[in-house]
Length: 220
Image (tube, rainbow, N blue to C red; front, side, top):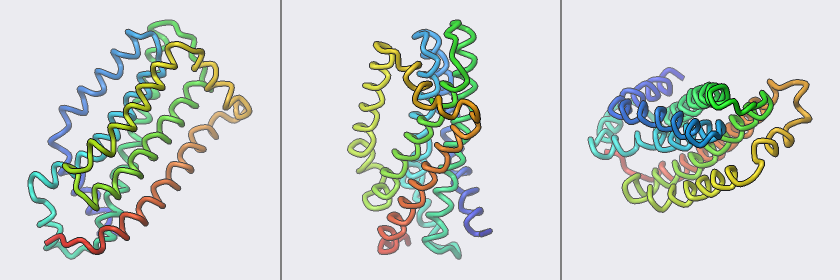
């Protein structure tokens, strides 16, 4: 377990170079939600940008040939992959909290009257999107590399999100999301728990695929 956690720490150290970009995405997400008077857009954008942040460690690793460092460390490939997915889970959870805070704050600023059920439902669904996107992307990155696969892997998913945001501005999406989870209004804590459990299932399946793909790849 210590070896897995050490690889997670190494991933966070590798990702230090994108901290500035990360902060910029938070500012953009907050401003867009307020300017569009759609607090849920802030939530969604934070998690959409989060998918890039989670995958960018592959890019930094490739540019700096960090894979050679992994090759000389006493680590199994399964340890490296498990550590990478833990890194992604942490990114997703942190961004979910930040997105929820932005959504709540945006709702107060524009007086959108966003209910707690709708906010928690949006955070849960956005986290599910994050997990789904990462679960698709990581095995592809392990197989083909980030540089070769990013555009073909993530652009279609981003387009779906943009289309969803467009629909949200044209329809009563806020109310629809809240109504979909209304049966959990008596126990709102179950709403994010729902997203967490399903999201982790996505990650477990994806990690298994990544191990199957990466075990035949030379990292030296």
